[in-house]
Image 1 (cartoon, one colour):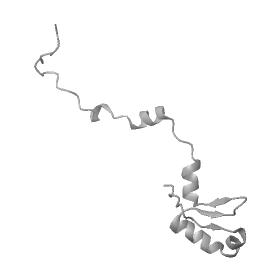
Image 2 (cartoon, helix red, strand yellow):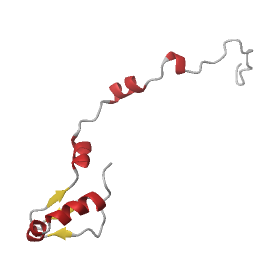
Image 3 (tube, one colour):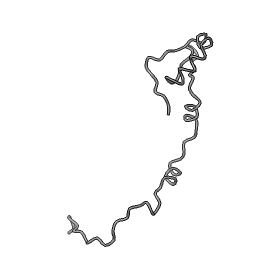
Length: 90
């Protein structure tokens, strides 16, 4: 569940981040990604968020196979329905 980025996020200097690492990590957990550095930027995120971003996505075909309903779950129409009038038939 990736955190949303705030437009007014704080960017820590590297010196501040080193001196207040515990606070930076607490804020990552509570508020989301923390940004460090101006010229050479870094982003600190939680391990859970990192794993969700780096895990390969399952191909659509495999997802469809895994999530396809079984025959027991399908609602099949009644075969004994009376014939319906076809409007537009010549």
